[in-house]
Amino acid sequence: MSLTLYTFPGNFRAFKALIAAEYNGLEVETADFDAAAAALSPLGKAPVLQTSQGVVFESNAIARYVARARRDTELTGVTFIETAQVDSWIDFSAHELELPSSIWTYPVLGYMPFNLDAYNKAQKDMAAALKKLNDHLLLRTFLVGEKVS
Image 1 (cartoon, rainbow, N blue to C red):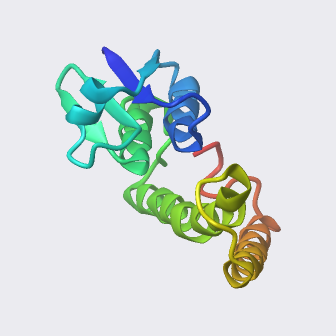
Image 2 (tube, rainbow, N blue to C red):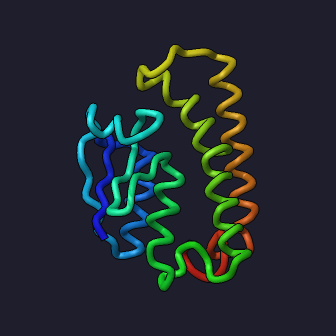
């Protein structure tokens, strides 16, 4: 299986797929995101994954593709409901963790201007999301099932 992930150095969104690849024992080559790579994605954004069968864009879709590439590792769950629960936590992470953390940190990185109201709301939203995550894990070792998913 030939996989090339086009991204920028340190792109946290690309880390999802790279971590899934590590757990699945898959080799994913990384390459710099340039104009040619931007042309692979309908949105022109990083990351984008080139496979021997076609292109996958959007970080969560790429991570899911890599995680599902080997069913024997059960990274996406064992049963149909566990797969849906894994998807639920991926979506939770994107909406409840990534969004406020981006709003919280992007001004520091110079990606957007600082806005105190947005900063305070992001901090509050992040704390609430982390509490929900912590509450879920109080009686569990893993988010879903009995192994890393």
